[in-house]
Length: 396
Image (cartoon, rainbow, N blue to C red):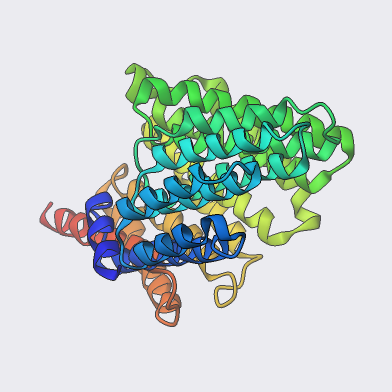
């Protein structure tokens, strides 16, 4: 299984560092263990499928995924119980995700939900089955990437939940958040033209979610929806020029910024860490906008990115919220490196020296962190860029 996990990760994420590959491989192994546990639990549900479920668990343990799927399919055919069939499809979906086939996994979740729907009136169990399936697809895509081909099935699951008429106000908002999160995740992966449609759809879903949360008086959930709206509009801007060859619309930039600031207004008193995360998102937006605009206007945006990240760090403890703190530090350092490329050599060297100090501090903070390989790789990439820029400036 370990060898399979390593080979699959290298094939899916070829540009990752050794530490990143190890972390992804560990995530793949953990997912495989979850699938094995689910198959073993399935074996205890009844004698009719026990032998097939046990055979599937053994096949998963040995990374024989085709064999596991074959025996699970046989188990599915041997029972007429809808909930049991749905559980079998869930195990098949988890196994498909382990082997990196998100599209097959999405199909299994849709089929499993269909078995539950056929049992009669809509139940809470059916809604949760769909929601959990969408969550698994999003987490897999956010970690391992892919082409987002699963989004059609994911939206079928989301829309079925949204159509429920007996949902309370909070659940109505939560189901829209599922739909928005799925579209945002796939929009980051899809080719540019389709990505824009998905990201606009994500913003719309988050906007509807925020209305439900506002109506129900769920302030923290409303703030989460506003932050998500900002993310959707920000990524729309990031992909827009790639898709159209034109600069992003001003309204999309300002819309994202307004959503972030609205979320911060609520989070400032409720959750300092969530407030800091939103301000980091705002800094990342300013970084990208500064890169896009260039000139003095772009330099102003980059300075604002530095200020936003530094402001976020003021409410964070580097030794406690290390991952969030380092995220801010990376954006801050990248903004300084971008500034160094926009100004005269004397001023550029000042920005490079400051970037070096910030990155060195980040390395020191990460020295004691064992579980942050992606952050360590990000800092190393920025240090390599710093060396290249410094060498060019020295040569000049």
